[in-house]
Length: 154
Image (cartoon, rainbow, N blue to C red; front, side, top):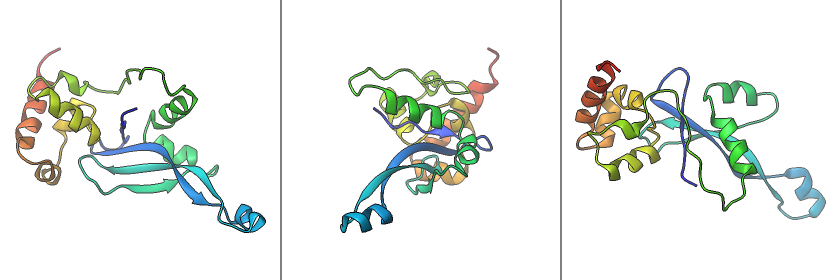
């Protein structure tokens, strides 16, 4: 299944997703007298287009607060865990104009942008100058055309 990043409530430029990482379990390790690792859910977040990802472990006391910042991320994680691995991926609905409507971007670039955390035209339109510089050639034009597309009457 492809990586899916969810925009933060406060900014379309920040994206997050829930995934699992291995963590050493001290009590089980002592009992087994060898390292025992367990899988724990974490919220990964980053600035869209960045490769610098931060992790925050989801625990009972902080899960709701952290997950509320990235609407849909926890639900997607739970759904993905419950699915059988051979099921076809289902379309994910984001708040905003799907990036596939950005007809000014080549189709092969759309999947790359999705991997970078861009899922909506609104996210492209809100790119900062630093993000544009990191994205490389053509990104400034994408931002300008995304802004124009959003200004067109529906």
